[in-house]
Image (tube, rainbow, N blue to C red; front, side):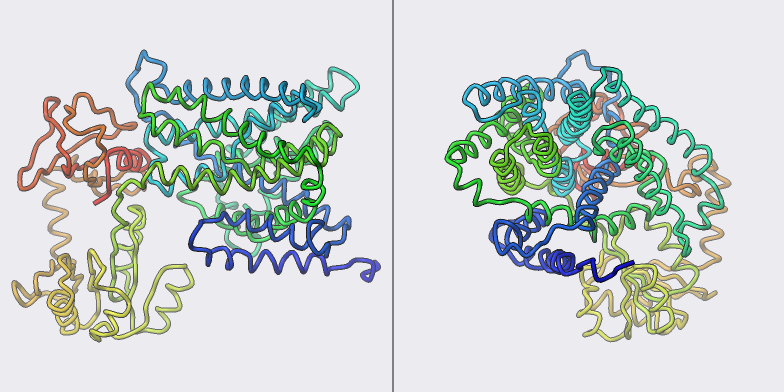
Length: 620
């Protein structure tokens, strides 16, 4: 093989940019710029719009194409089917109380408006193909919508789910329609269009095979984290199978790789697997940045600016992409405030990967001109920067208290068992040890760990123990445990201190400085006593599976203020066990009226309880 015939200079430039652009972007404080926008802009600087440093080659073309395919795969992987399940089990007769139906209606109106605007564009000679331009205008960016909803802590609310479902349907249906359009436009026989349906057949076949041969397969689990990384290899095999199948069917790869991502999302539980982290690292660490930088490098802004049409094409497209999303979103006024409805329209107006992909397909087919494609890229950059800013201003972040900070001082079997059980409650765990080997062990598994003396007040203050909600003391030296309890209570004012001890004679009262002591004898007797007296109720607290939890949440959602419990419908199997209102403990009945600031104890499956917490208010 002639290695000299391959130039790595262009790839080196791209990878160096991919490394430093995120660092530079984070230093821009006055306006939050998405990293992908920075990647596209940096590509413009080194590409045709700037210094023209990137030389075309088959190798770069492959990385560009596969980066695009991997981005579509990650979009499918991003879908959380638990979030798509309706949170309201009550069968409402009104259509606007059904998020899925609302999402479908919103997208249909968007499609109709896009068709009308595209037709007007054609009349004025701005576009040549109405159908494709309609699909270009109908896209949205699920990759921007999902992080914003998560950041606002509203993704599990009825409002958040309506936006999520609208974005999902918009992305998915648009991808399907683009795939059918391209196949129809390029095929010589009508039956070839129907061959696209084979992608969905392959989707169900591979999904069923995965359920049978992959899920709960011991060999797959054993090889998942070894040097074989079998799940990662399987994911890449699936991507290439669908790419090859789409290529054989003579259609675009966007739908195939998206379906491959959906299969992995269905087969692998996100909360219990690190496969998502690995695939994100591979995709966003290498392939996806290459795609976006190459988009910028291939974009010649000089040709767009020099074209007289661009003077009115870019503003016209901007008005169009906002109009086709904001106007339909006004229907949300039936269920939400006008402010929320318009905010949703702005967020759904965010465009990025799919609109660029759709425009690139049109350019390749000769249905979209170079200046139009350039204008679409500019519009994508503007909307994915401007739209989240408007949404953030219109929708202040839900006042969710930060996750509980728990410091565990001392690493042993008991403290590690406790840590594993606490992880399912999404707490911020920090370990403190004086043992270097224990420090290395905890560091290797990715947990926060500090190496130092737990009786050094200045050092403890430096690592932020004052911010702890709870401190667990589990050192092997009892005198040191007492000293640590004293420091935590008297120096830092920490209210909740737990002492895990092996001592038979547990110090009482002031000797523990308010810490709750738990010894093996006490824990065993306590569990046995309550399991004998209340076997069914007590067993709820000690299930082995991670799918059942009890949590507390403060009521801060105004929609539930002064609302009777019999009108409150929580997700799935969630139940309200008790309500604490100041010093008053309330056993819940249907006639009880919820008050702002009520502390509500909820029990149910973990994913449903997480939804309920976001619906009702802030986490304790």
